Length: 126
Image (cartoon, rainbow, N blue to C red):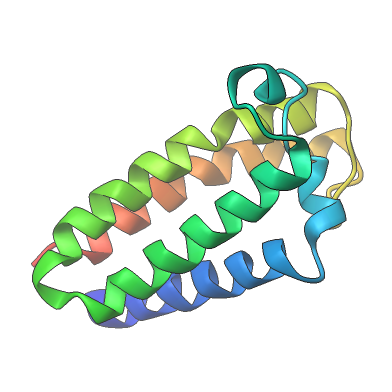
């Protein structure tokens, strides 16, 4: 079951990462908080592109590096925590994106983030 969950998470991460680079760039920019460009010296599009590359690498590492899968899971869990401010910003600024076009939908998404953290940690344990 853990192997299936890990592979499913890996596929989801690679898919999400590719969408950051190609068809979903505009939608993902809605999730980048305005203050991010003050902390990181790149524009919102750069943040989206960089996070897409990170997602692809993390997703691939879940299956391509079996000896390091526990570390990959911990890094992915930390990544999910790191992107939470973007989800919070999308909620508080009422920015639509990916069908999250109501306050309720954006709020529900916030509660899904801890599930992703747990999924990353659980699926990479032996």
